[in-house]
Amino acid sequence: MYIKIKPDTLFTGTGLLPAGNVLIVNEEGIVADIVPEAEAGDDIRSISGILSPGFVNAHCHIELSHLKGKVPEGPGLVDFVQKIMTGRAADEEIKNAAMSAAAAELYDGGTVAVGDICNTADSLSLKQNSPLYWHNFIEVSGFSEAGAVSRLSAAEDVLDKFNVPYSRFSTLSPHAPYSVSKKLFHLLNEKTAGQLISIHNQEAEAENELYENKQGKFLELYQNFNIDISSFVPAGKRSWQTWLPYFDRKQTIISVHNTFINQQDISFSAFHVKNAGLYFCLCPNANLYIENTLPPVDILLENDLDIVIGTDSYASNRSLNVYDEILTLQKHFPSLPLATLLKWATLNGARALGIDKQFGSFTAGKKPGLVQLYEGKAKRIQLPGA
Image (cartoon, rainbow, N blue to C red; front, side, top):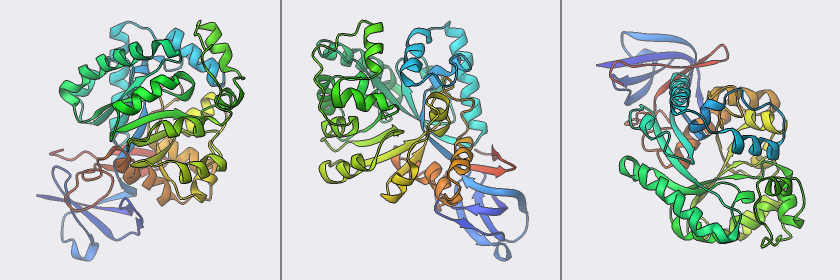
């Protein structure tokens, strides 16, 4: 049995089609075809707004869901990180309830796949019973050179727990340039050869100051947490230009936030770095929440870079709905075409996670999920067999 849906506008994953086109799927949501209404026959279901493939949330922290509303807006990244480090502990029951509610919001809002940051195995049980696709980025951090081996070993212990059900979809990833030592970067380069990794990049200007001259607000964080940085020697270069060359083993990299990236950095990556793929993830609502600043989207566009969208966590956002991120980008960058934004949230995200054979577009044979966009909202369309 086939289900036929005719929206006001149909987004295919690459472009917008006008009214009069019908998407045909089976009861499980597998795409059969897109045809003109005149060729679709009977039993056509008409819906208002835009019909899009399901969203791919390329960056989330589901295990921080219990921190919703706990961190004040606008502290700046360094203060934000310190609040997370000191306040993330909670009762297991509270954490599980918050993660379940967050996962339900993701699902109901049309998300089909998530690139999720994990410091623990707290979310494992949730994911084993979830209708969503999860790629688990097991986060590795440690700015002290002396602790590099032990910090990597601890992360590998978490990875092992995820590898039982998720052996193909879990990878080690560096947290951020300000929290990973040179030695740990080198170890991760070897461990992640040919794999997909994610890293928080240039979320604050202080990160560039650290790598250029060992100054800036991150020194306060190291002092407050008794982190020994005596062995750290600044590269005299911006953060991006320092850490990116560490990965030369054909990794695919999702660089997240990029709030303070500039043209010099982009030009550097084009001429000096070779990798299997490089994606730039935007989390605009989190950037506004923490730093009250947005990434230089115009520079990313001018350089024809591959862009994806994430929500970050409830600690830095009021919502985990990808469409809310799209609306924020529309508001602040009104010249951005809607089709471009939707492609970032669907097909580009699927390509970044390596799941575009199933998700990201209304291509025959795929099962990408269906989301209806109308009146500023996104709602999953549930099918009988899905």
